[in-house]
Image (tube, rainbow over all chains, first blue to last red; front, side):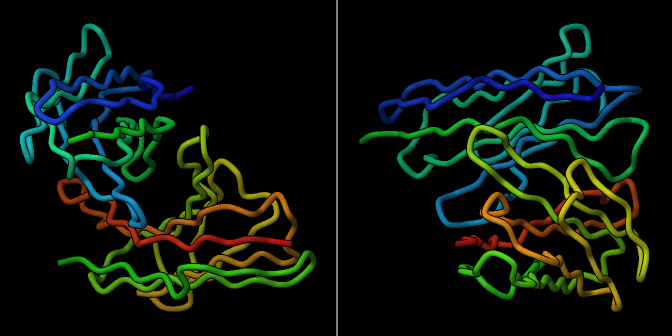
Length: 113
Length: 114
């Protein structure tokens, strides 16, 4: 069945370090891929998305590239800030569904000054 | 901006009580969702509604029901709360149009069942 596997946390980095959070998926058809972020005490908000192979989603310095050949959508940021501390969720919407999102388990990122 | 409002941030209920969690969205979205979020398990879909009075079971519907009498409001009902339903509950809404099919989330309701 459809699934999303993302890097288990927690991840702790110093400010200005490079961030990678790995995400791989299994899905039917041609899924759309998403990264959501959840700041402390808040709901999830969309960080970036990609809808077809080789698309790169980007926002707030974060990037992820839709790699169909490796079924991956890894999240990267070149220089993290303390304000990036949050839980990050990878998700996909299967090509066979126009509504259901399948989420990974989330990765807690803590950035220290 | 899209706004999804959940009526309570924190709730404490007793085992066996009937619990209502309310969610309202202001973007005229057709689709609305209820998830529960548990540490190490991520988000799991409880129920989904694609129109007024229409609903579909998600991955973990047991012990829950839903109501959608108006387009903007989607309620999650725990008929007889149990301790294993202690969790964070998240409501989301989305347009049915594929190009705009981004889910927008509320801030969540943290429910404790004692």
